[in-house]
Image (cartoon, rainbow, N blue to C red; front, side, top):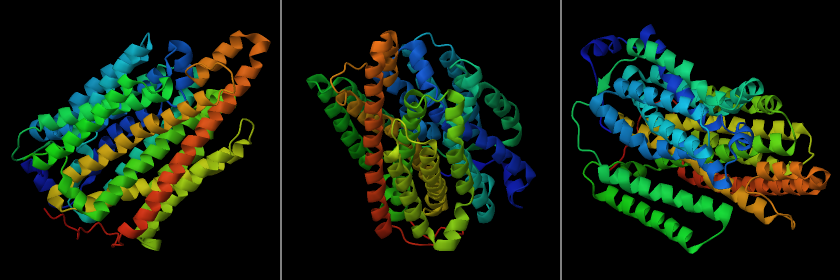
Length: 511
């Protein structure tokens, strides 16, 4: 994305440094960031209630969770380019309107198909809410020190929203029906509509290039079929038609990358990845959010459907990790100052791996403190690494390329969450179905437990077998996350180089 130019009145304000109005503007900008990240995770505790109400299949259940994330990931950079042309504040408010309307539709969806469609619309709206934030911060805060503080606040809002989503959702679900997890978006968007035009300045690109329409089509034609194939294979087994769809997705992704190398105005600036620190940071965002998304979803089901906690208790059990993520997002710069950038990155990834490894100790009757301790350890790691990702991504490229870098970083965050639900969720489903011990399971744990309840006393064995099988699936997904995080930590040890934590850009990207 091209460098944005502020209006003349904003240039005069910024010339003397960030004023109070800019900091209030930052507070407004964190609202959509908080909302979009929270809407990824707010459904984790609501899924059992949605399953009871709408009876989705296993594939539909995963689509409800992550069609939102995949559309956001696929459209983030595109919507950033739209914002360059029509104005970032304008596209922000237009996306907020679509997001709000889709949230209301989702809240009152009568079946799984309509809920999936509403979540897809929320994804389109969410894609307009995210890409302007970091690049707007770069323009609103020209002073490096102010900009570093602003980025820390932005990261805390993103990471904190993802961690607090299940907690907020659980508290609301304790008192209301499942649709309330969507309706909470409405008052937040109302504040954005009222305060945004007054506090957030408008920015447009001074000159614009053509849309990479082909890139948009190829990226979506690659991501969605491939994920559909993974989900379907996990829930229904491998068939020739499903395998063909998966192969088609791989071919389209290869065509997308080939097109990006030739395009004059590519959707994805591959040249940025020649910078090792940039590539490493983006990979951390992708893998870290994948592990966090998968862990949050599976443990949410575990606490309610396996251990039998009510939704409020499950929400409160997630509070220590949420606090750890938010606190260490804000305090990450102190960690870097104490031990250096590379050690901070590697250490944070290893902490996340240890937290996921601890989930292997969870059983159908393990004490709750095991869950609390290891999710909190993981939360410390996630909080540090996500804050460092934003700082490194913005700081490892020239100022004029920070917009494109931010778009790629945000896409990695969103795509990582969606991949965690798709890949780790599908792996857990596959193991669940294969570990039936001779029993006939439904598509999901919730459906199987409902069937066992209808059987009366004769369903006790089925329910126990299903809970054990789900724990086996959660263990398999956790182990996969641990291995991935451990490999990433080894790679980071060799790739990352320490640099001063002052936000100074002294790395460049060579064409």
